[in-house]
Image (cartoon, rainbow, N blue to C red; front, side, top):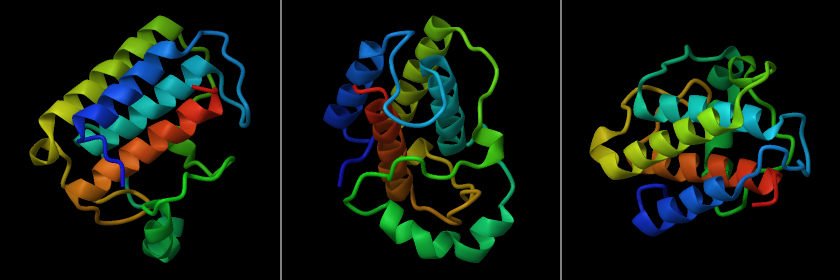
Length: 149
């Protein structure tokens, strides 16, 4: 399973982020490229522990049941539901959001499992650092595929 803690995998993700174009066409969903970058940055901040949202009611009920399929081999499905705190609806500046996400991905990957959050995921509940590495990769891959990179 791919993990953002693997330097070749994080390098691949960074290369794909750098291939994005401000007016890139989405294959599904509603976000623009800058909004997607901001959305992914929030997820990375959760993984590094700088944002700690509270557990969601739905997560408490079904998060641990869904976790194995999300962490499995299959890519995340298109149009997966998103917690409202992760929805970006305002206009964002592409270059700023791209640079922010690149910095967050680099810091997370270089920090390794030792620098990964120990906080509970808002939806899935407790995750090991290894699971955070897989989840961050799969989430970024999902949104980069959304824009064809």
